Every structure is written in C-alpha cells, then in structure tokens.
Image (cartoon, rainbow, N blue to C red):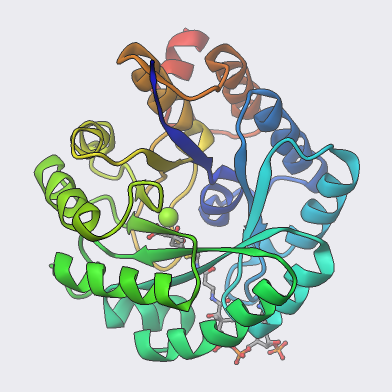
Length: 298
Ligand code: HMG
Ligand code: MG
C-alpha cells in the first residue's frame, strides 16, 4: 500500500499575507475553489488578525463566509486566530477549524503578536475554550522552531516543550515552523526524531519556508524520520510580515510532484494543481516560485 502524506494548503493565508499585491476577493475565492477542485482537503482561508498589523488579511471574513456558503465542504477550512476578538470573528463566520500561533523565541513572539510566549498561552486558553464550546477544531503553530531572525539558534528541546503545552491546552495538531527558511535537512531529521519520540506522527506537521532553497531536501529527511504532514503554499507564495527577508512556503506543486515521484500518495491531482498555479501566475507581475509550474509554462 502506498504511504499517504497530508498536505495543508496555506497559500491563501501565509502566501498572500506577505505579497505586495493584494488579490481581489473574487480572485481569492476562485483560488480557493480551484485548490479544492485539485483535491486539497485542508485549506487555510485567511487570518482573523488585526487589519492594522496585516492589511492583506482584512477581507478574510468575506472569503470565509462566501466560500462556505457556495461550496459543499469536501475540505477542512481553517483561519488563523491570535486572540479572543479573532475567535469571536471565527465563531460568527461558521468556520470549523482555527489555528493559534506562538513561537519558540521571545523576540519573534513580541514582533509578531505583541506579547511574550507565556502571555500567548494566556491568550490561547479562552480562545481554545470558546473553540471547543463551538465544536471548532484547534491547530497550533510554533514559529521560529529552527532559528529566529532576532535571536539566532533555537533549542529543539524548547520546541518540544512548547508543542507539549499546545497539546495540553487542546490543540489536535502542532505545526512546527521554519519561519525564515533556515533549517537544513539534518536539523529537520533530528527535530522530527525528537518530536516523534513523544508525539504521534498524526499530530505533528512541518511548515517549511524555502528562503534558502533547502525546503524539498528538508522534506525528504523529515519523511525519512516519519513526518507525514506538511504545510505548503501554491506557487510558493508569500513569507511572514514579521520575519524580514522570509520568502514563501515551499510550493505545493513541487512538493506534490516530488512525493508522487517517490511513491507517496496525496490524493491531489498534480495536473489540476499546475493549471491552478499557471492561472495564479497571471495575477502577479513576477514569476512564482514553483519549479514544476515554470516547466509547464516554458
Ligand atoms: P495589539 O496591537 O497588541 O492588540 O495586537 P490590541 O488588542 O491592542 O488591538 C489593537 C487594534 O487591533 C484594535 O483596533 C483592535 O480592535 C484590533 P483599534 O481599536 O486600534 O482600531 N484587533 C483586532 N482586529 C481584528 N481582529 C483581531 C484583532 N485583535 C485586535 N483579532 C494582535 C495584537 C495579536 C492582534 C496583533 O499583533 C496581530 O494581529 N498580529 C498578527 C500578526 C500576524 O498575522 N503575523 C503573521 C501570521 S504568523 C506567521 O506567518 C507564521 C506562521 O506561518 C508559521 C511560520 O512560518 O513559522 C503561522
Ligand atoms: Mg509561515
């Protein structure tokens, strides 16, 4: 039997939050629909964060409500939520999954969400309680798990401790983020081995940015160590507004292409994904960061 890998598409959130060009609501809705038609079953639609902080996400409510209204839910949709205000917006929208986010380094947490790591957990508690009261699933991110733009090295043991606390407060899955694309393959292998000693592979995702071109190699070593869930972004869009120089997530189509070539199954239609990437390309004035889509356009 083929081994299955679960892909979480984060292009509409992580991708677009850091693009200079803000796509229109109809284009974002079309993108969401195309991703779903290509077989993506976990899709982040946006972020209920402060529009003062990330203006690109201010239309999230329109996207979520309109997409949920028009589409039979073959996919699990999610939005980022930083605090109670975000959670209230999430509950009102009808979404059935949210993601909370903290980091493994204090300086990044301050820059990103204006509080300490400890304070971020204080904010999460009422958010998670409210989510569970409304049957909303909670995913959680740990940013800067492999290195911080302000503090440099981050201890893997610290990441493991934070992951444990996130499970304790009720997250069903923890996504371990290489926010600035600094991780290397052996570091990913070691991180995976450390985390999978204590946590099930069904509960740990790796979220790799491709800033230094190491993301596919990182995925290979993570797979070897047992990781089976990866966050990716169509066309390799994006970055993080609070990590200077961070480029996009590893491109979904490149990951799916590699996984299928290696004998893994994703239940994603690669050809439809590439067509979506080609269509998306028309909305940007620069080439997207996807090798297989570039090949298809050549
Ligand atoms: P703050 O300024 O400390 O919050 O921000 P505040 O409570 O003082 O509120 C300030 C203003 O924001 C007020 O508006 C609030 O109403 C409003 P005003 O009265 O001035 O007009 N506000 C909100 N509006 C809408 N929705 C909300 C909300 N909360 C407050 N939820 C806060 C604190 C956490 C809100 C802010 O820092 C924030 O929104 N940060 C988000 C940053 C962000 O989105 N970063 C990118 C995502 S994380 C990422 O990319 C990493 C990841 O991909 C993994 C990886 O790669 O490592 C996940
Ligand atoms: Mg990210």
